[in-house]
Structures are given as structure tokens and as C-alpha cells.
Amino acid sequence: MEAYPHRYEAHAAGEAAGSVLVSSEGLPVLTTAPPRQFGGPGDLWSPETLLVAAAANCFILTFRAIATASKLAWQHLDCDAEGILDRVDGVVRFSELHLRARLVVTTAADIDRARRLLEKAEGACLITSSLAFRSTLTTEITAAA
Figure 1: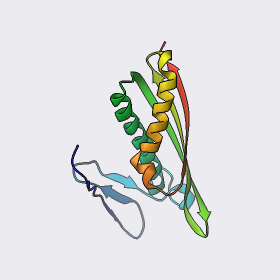
Figure 2: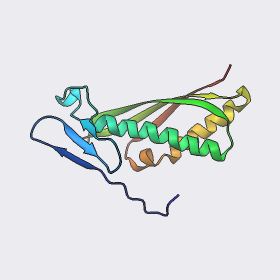
Figure 3: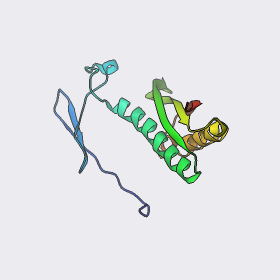
């Protein structure tokens, strides 16, 4: 891992109407637009969906690192994320984030330890730790057949 601080750069470009192109060196360009709730088409990534997706993605990558360090054998992790956008103290902002994680571990004996590692990952995720809203985690763990 590189020494801190890390820097991440992105670029966005758009016109008075239409989609916005989001790019970063070496990455595919994303076409974005406002979400349906703000008059957008609803069929493109929006800043709101990107933020919620970043939280889910960070949770899985953080769990992967923690599970590896803890030598937990696992097969698959799905994470659904729901961000709640609301008016709070006169300001529209995300007020909550709900993560629903479904993990498949190799053996049933690892279920309790896996739950603790999922909870640790939720607390260690740098995206959710950097945001000012309440984050919750719901987990479901099964053992492979």
C-alpha cells in the first residue's frame, strides 16, 4: 500500500442540458444524469446512486481485506445498499444508509466469526466513515452446501 495521503481525481463535464460525463485517468467514462426524482431520465448513473454504490463497493472490499487478514474462508458476498435522501434542518442531504449483506461462508462453524468480521468491515469502510449520516448493516450468512 502507498503512504498516505492518497489522492483520487475525477473530472466531470456537461452542457446546460443532457448527461454529464464523469472520467478519471485510466478508467472508463461514465455517463450520468440526475435521478428520476430530480427530473432525470432514471436510466443513467446519478451522483446519488454513485455515492450509494461506492458505500456498498467499499464495504465489500473492506470485508475482503479483513477476512483475508483473519483467514476467514468465504465464497460470495452480495451487498444491497439504500441511501435515504431527506430534508434535515432545512438542507437536503443523505440522512441514512442501509446495507444488507448476504455472505456465503465455507463452513457453518464460521458463521459467528463471519458476522463479527462483517460488522468490523462496516465500521472500517472509509467511504461510510467519511460521510455524515447514520449507517446500518443487516447481514445474512449461509454455509455452502
